[in-house]
Length: 333
Image 1: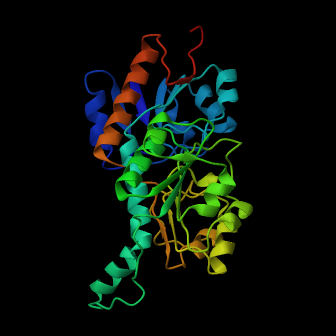
Image 2: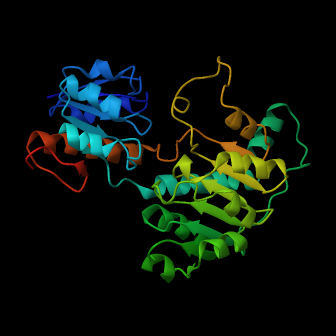
Image 3: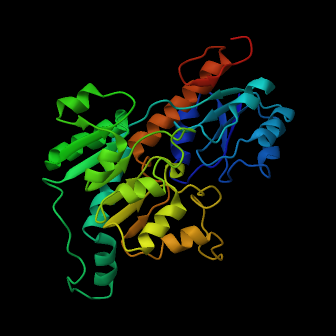
């Protein structure tokens, strides 16, 4: 079977080609899947997509009309896929249900540490041979309170690191994680967590119930000198409300690896273009805000696991099998 892989990064390409070698033919494209690029898939029974692909109803109908029968997404999240339409069209859709939680958890801490200790500002200064310390004073995380919203695999890994720092641990989730409670985590209501935490980190999936989980009300509940980190999904945070609070001089720092309107921006070079997203442009003007381009998962270990799972998903589809990774099963399975 020949697979067409959309949205493949340069570092990702050799891993994909090596994993598929001897099993299926794969052709990698840098372009992301959307309404304009969907016709390229014509004649390919199976395609692979990235997290920023747009698999709305129209895209899925274009794919189905071109002969595509299987979509293998290289991510855990699938909020970008219209699963109801996929099922209606008889398309098989699979995702990657698990990859290294440490990749995201460690990067979330990288963001927290960077904004706390003003690392980006310090690095920019020293490149200009400015070695002053003015404005670079940080705070110890040891002894302070961390609030973890979502204590699944990634949230647990993040909590273990927080425990290593010697922090007080607060958690919020629909169910308690015994591994986190064993570390001393206390589960509380969201408002209590936001009011008491010096550092708030988000590790929940993006669902209708969690969209804008951190809205204007939640932001107002946080300490004025708190740090907010989001390495999960951009839609968890109401960005316009966040900008409003930042304009009021609130928060010690914000670290965002995701942005709710990142599609069409992240993973692309927009350096020579005018910025048309006024909210993002304003967000980037704050010196204590650090935005990265959805790279928390991007380690050799995690991407390797994602690629291996994607190959297995395609192989299972070809053999008429299904697994926990299948969101919409093959017709007749």
